[in-house]
Image 1: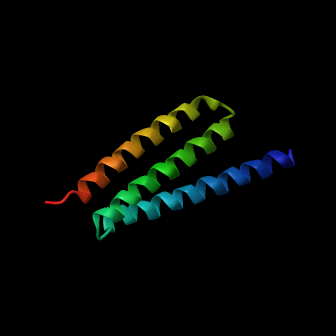
Image 2: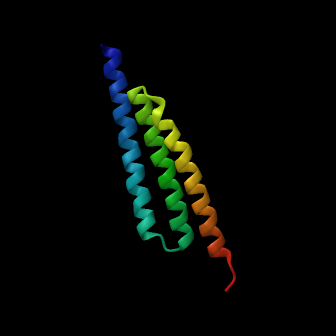
Length: 91
C-alpha cells in the first residue's frame, strides 16, 4: 500500500518535471534569437517527448509505445540534418 503511494508520487514528480521542461523548451523555441536556437529547441522537444512516452510506458506497464520513440528519433534526426544543411549553405 505504501509502496504504491511512493510510486505514484515519483511518477507525479517526473511528469511535473517533464511539463516544466516542455514549457521552458517551448519558450526557447518561440523566443530564440537565431535559427540554430530554434533547431536545438525542436530537438530538445523531441527528447522530452520521448522521455514522456517512456515514462508513460513504464507507468502503464506496456512496452507498445517504445516503437513510437524509435520512429520519432529517426524523423527528428533527419529533420535536424536537413535544417542544418539549409543553414550552412552559402548563398
